[in-house]
Amino acid sequence: MAAPLIAGNWKMNGLGADLAEADALAWDLASAPSPARVVLCPPATLVERMARRLAGSVIQVGGQDCSAEPSGAFTGDISAAMLTDAGATLVILGHSERRAGHGETDASVCAKALAASAAGLEPIICVGETLVQRQAGQAIDVVTAQVAGSVPPGAGGPFALAYEPVWAIGTGLTPTIAEIEEVHIAIRKALIAAAGEAGQRAPILYGGSVKPGNAAEILKVKEVGGALVGGASLKATDFLAIIRAA
Image (cartoon, rainbow, N blue to C red; front, side, top):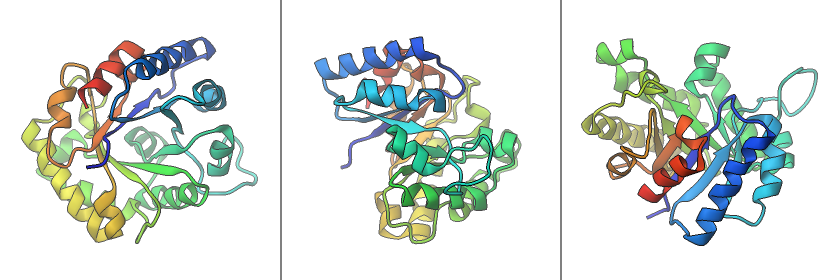
């Protein structure tokens, strides 16, 4: 089995001084290695500095978004090649906060994933339903449609899929273990339909209020191949506890 992928999304948090948390995490993992594959995704201002500090460690660095365009008059945007140049090896795409707050669609996420793969980045493509959709019994339909529309058809390069129920992000709420398993199994079928063998290999991460106290139980669920962690990834001690649970 592939090593679980544990990715930390710092979101819009972190200044230069906070790189000490990444240093502490790297030191702990060097002292007692984990079988998990570990990624930190800081804000764009810290990507290059974090990559330099973690060079030679087991921790990879990722971005939180990229443009579908390779370059040009797109003020404020960051291309996939720029992230690669800064030392990133992965990038989160289509997070619900981007979809809801920036109007990103399945089609735009798919275009970004293609650009990321072309630049040598491994996309972590996010999908997830809202509470209204969950309560209406639409979770599986919504999520599998997002997979079909967001994953590049016949994707050949490595990528990961992250299932993050929107209503569980940062709320302290989580789906039941049975609900997580049901969605992850459905996502696997949708991934295979969308990307063939690549869809069979792609890890499916769970995200949404993953904490040291619930990580071990979640990571044992069928088809859960890792975790996308938000707030708990900001502190080395909390994030390390989740990594150790893998």
